[in-house]
Image 1: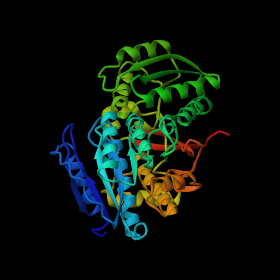
Image 2: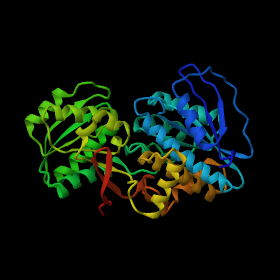
Image 3: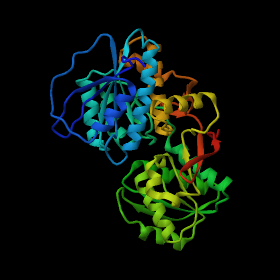
Image 4: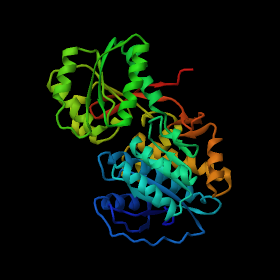
Length: 407
């Protein structure tokens, strides 16, 4: 692999601090060094790096050191892999991609500040957001105001793209994801009743809860009880005891992996044996270290399966494992990969670095062949594509079936 593969900047900052640091090396070294540097902080330097006429700057921000760090790091791995492939193929019009990387630490306020910095100081032509909907909701208005294209890899809250016409996503929305699990639980699992555990502070969790309930009840199911918690809570026994008393057929837990693992373990300790259901927020290796065997028999909706035999998916999985020490790419890695390729295809069709022309080209995307499915955009610039259902068993996500949007 060429040393020119990817020019990845990481400017790490805590409130009131920032420094520019450039890592130019092999792509694997970039990822390893970034992971090693995440916990550190640096001194702020206000100087703006002069633009290099031979590069195209793409901004990236995501949670690289906060409560959902696996999302941001996986998306970054996929994004850098795509950038490396593009650069080794000649770049865009002979110009190499230069990825400017920022850690929002899982903070929406910080995400908004970093997008402003990427646009004003780094002069990026577009921004890719990796991770949670809350951060994208806070940051997207900054890109919209500056007329800089903004592509979310995995923020599924429908409100994200409603920010404005410069905001796109390569993932499906919670409207579809919640509907899919409601349909699967009634049609395939034959569940007649359910309970819901919702993180009331999290727009992702609230949205999935609402859309699951709508889908489940539309098909004749009944939600017996809804219990709430806050991200980071250590004890869920009170809510789970109320669910046990209600006696539902299934329990829907649309949260993030850090909480879900503990909820699953405490549910089994209380004698709850019902299947747990969830969404893409469960997809992280850390889930198993937290929940262990308590997760067996659960089902989640997700964006793709690494076990899918499709040639394009197996090629992606093989290349990713070769690049990242036999690590199996999760959905966030696949979405990060798709986000970069989706964006750069738009840049190529625009034949310009002008934000408005890139936006117009992205909006006209049709039948984009992504690893996570063929992407067409609806009127709100959301990806319309299938979801997959995965069963959790002995630390493995087992492909069950593909669920397509209902007409």
